[in-house]
Amino acid sequence: MILDYFNNLRQSPKGYRLATTAFFFISGFGYSSWASRIPAIKAQLHLSEAEFGAVLFAFPIGLMLTMPFTKRILNLFSSRYCMLSGAVLFNIILTLPGFVAYVWQLVLILLIFGASRNILNLSMNAQALEVQRLYPKSIMTTFHAIWSLAGFAGAGLGYVMVTQHIDPSFHLLGIGVAMLAVVSCFYPLTIETEPSKEESKFFSMPDKNLLKFAIICFVSMACENTMYDWSGIYFQNVLHASQKITTAAFVFFMTAVTLGRFLGDYAVMRFGIKNILFYSAIMISVGFLICFLLPFIIPTIIGFILIGVGVSCTVPLVFSIAGRSKSLSSGSALTSISTIGYLGFLVVPPMVGFISEALSMKWAFLVMALLGSVMIFMVNKISEDN
Image (cartoon, rainbow, N blue to C red; front, side, top):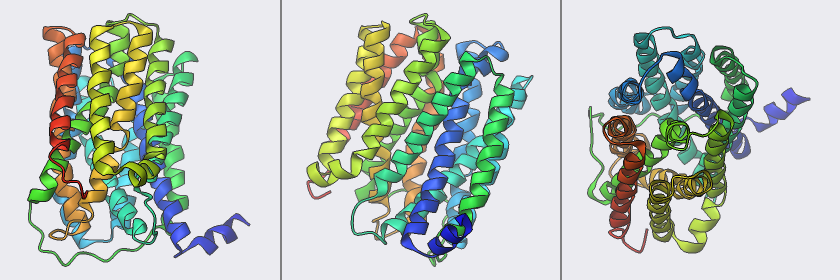
């Protein structure tokens, strides 16, 4: 009966949407599972904040180094094949961090992990843009909402694993194997896309109209990934909170991101992209500022919630705009805008570790609040018709 249901979904808009949703879930659940065990793996290797910040550079470096190649393969092959290869590699690598005994092993794993996430992320967003064209209403932020829901589920499961003292090695191994099974189930339903006829350049900047959105994407990705990498350590080192409260705070953040994205399509239709991006930037800045000014558990959780809502819809909306580019194919537009966006991923979260080592993590979060003000400035440059 289940096989009949899946067969009926083949080559239908509903089937394409379900399959793309499944891959967003795979990405979010896997990445959040890794993030929930970052404090344990940091402690496992006995690293300081600055040392761990340097190690974290490996993930975005792997992501950025493969960006030009991802653009080429998206122009040469259907995005469904790229998505399959990215998902398989992503989940195989996910099984490994808990087993590391040396820093160089974690660095190598994070390099490949970043590369696989780049391939998976760009190809599944390319798939999402193709599915969006089959629907008259906006569904783009809902795909990202599923990513966040999966992230929330992964963080929740991570909380259970931490409280039950399950070793990260067994936890991440189980997640990787389970997600590979999900890949095998939903890949047959993905949409076949035609390779682009566009001449493939090694690197292309966003066109003038997209550049401001790329900078907004830079800020949002920097702030969001700072939360993934450092929110737990902030609670441990600044607030001296227990492991249970530390993990629970990350769950609050992921809940805010999830709810914001589920409401995103409705909010965009009602208020417009510019207003959504403007208030998102305000919430990001205010959230980090609260963490700096009021370093106590309840105010910091409120700050985390504001940051979560603030970053929730920014990247989905930027990717949606990139897909409308008339000068670049969807794959090239996504890649060019993501190249700048992921620089935030590359430069900012690891720098939090160095700032924390030199001053304190409170001051690092103040820097993040100031970075949010850059997003406010760029949003004000967006024309009203966006």
